[in-house]
Amino acid sequence: MKRVAVFIDGNNFYFGLRKLYGKNKSLKDFDFQSFANFLAGEGKVVGICYYNAQLDREFNSKKFKSQKEFFAKLKSIPNFNLVLCKLLKRNITGTNRYYYIIKEDDIHMAVDMVDGSADDTFDTAVLVSGDGDFVPAVRSVQRRNKKIQNVYFKDSSSRSLKNHCDKSLELTKEILNDFFKN
Image 1 (cartoon, rainbow, N blue to C red):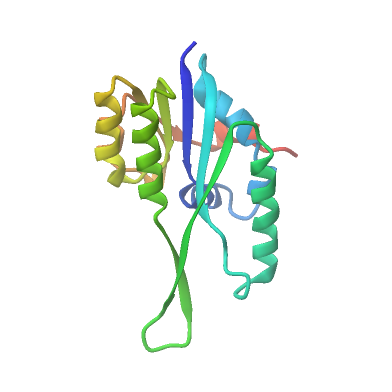
Image 2 (cartoon, rainbow, N blue to C red):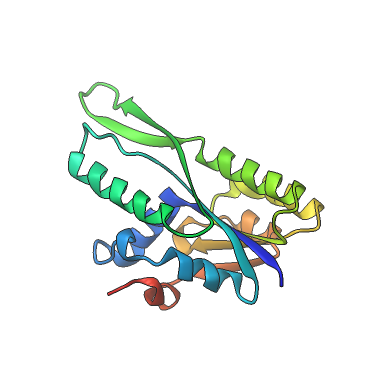
């Protein structure tokens, strides 16, 4: 049975779901274990890695608390690894307003995929992201005779990434509906 590792760009996944469902669905109601099993097909999920950053407690304490509860739920999933990256606060020039960006998530994902392929911890990697920056990591994983599947949302996908992966799957409501608990 092939060993499958799933790597999820949490920010990309969140905004992909929001674009499809609006505020009608919540990540808290999403069954990541079943989703990973679906992505693995006939294979066995040996690990799920989810990359994101902790929100700023002072900016929105309600969202911070909600995210903290969500992360606690994720940590209870077997073979689940929550990788928290940096959240940087940036000033909008000429204003007293701010925006936030997540840093280091892509590089953590790329390194974890390459290390996992070098350490022979999986046979297939499933990359849940549409970011074309992953192409060099995909090539590195494939040079180690590992397969890689790209799972993406329509409006956030890179043609180059899809073309370099062994398989690709566009996430649609028809696919995702089954993974939301009612």
